[in-house]
Image 1 (spheres, rainbow over the protein chains, first blue to last red):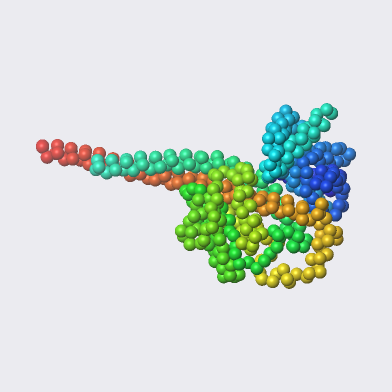
Image 2 (image 1 turned 30 degrees about the vertical axis):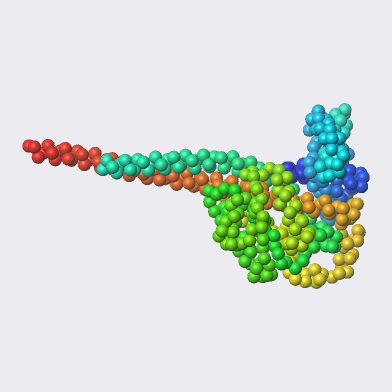
Length: 136
Length: 304
């Protein structure tokens, strides 16, 4: 099936693949060929896709996944990074910053707080995906 | 004669300094244009694909699921007019303004709807001065938009006004970037997301039972996870924002291209003028010398 991953800045991937595993709002799902039309929100997480027995991975910062009528999968992502692109020290610093800000304003529940929480989750995801592929 | 050459010389000087300015502006615009074009091309596939998907989804689900999908009888239109902050860009803004004027008149004639204009970019004010159309809000616009955050205030305002029923249709007027020398003014509907002409009774005409089957979570429609409302609540606003953002990017790229072209034309024209003036200057100088010689010769002949 056809997979397209697009962010506002670039087309990340446009390829034929055999399977993709994504982190949606409801939890992790795998999409195989001939899936019915489907729409879901994505949480920050790892996307693993398999093409001819090879598995590759991407860090996705949230967005949407749409399976279209012709069975092609479209991911409209806010941001996507390849594991090898992730600068772990910078991701760690960004996470620390977000965590610090969050502890400072924990008292009041407002938009800023949810935005920060999102940011924290994104950075954690980057670190997780980055670390995972660093070892290999 | 001496006076004549002096005057020509002064004109050459003034035209060359104008040329220097237009040349500099051309170069600045060229740099800005390159960046703007890069931005617009990068964002285009995301915006187009997102738009395609949202239209596709909108066709297959019950429009009552989400307020941004509902179309009503159109009485008030909110028109977002995206222009430049500055002029000297050839026909860039006036062409768009004429297009908007035509659009406003046509909706007034066809569906008897009034349009309120929301400005982004100072040059849009002329729509009021020239045509007298109502302007309800004005947003600041930066010269080169690079982040989607910059258009969020506009997007949030129009979505709120649409849901509250202040406007029944939201359109965005901008200049589409085709190439450095070709840009077309466009008026595009962004809300409601259903693809119809907004005429009276359109919704009622649709078979109600068909809507029902599509609204269920299986069959021909889309499967939403966790549920249609939650997904659409995030998806639709995001894609509307992207559309407006894309329009701003297109407009930016067009503006800087148009200005670059205008300035290039001005520079070329100045160059032609200088050439012409140089020619007449040389002629005048030559004429003055010839006259002087003939005066001297005439004077000498008179002495003999």
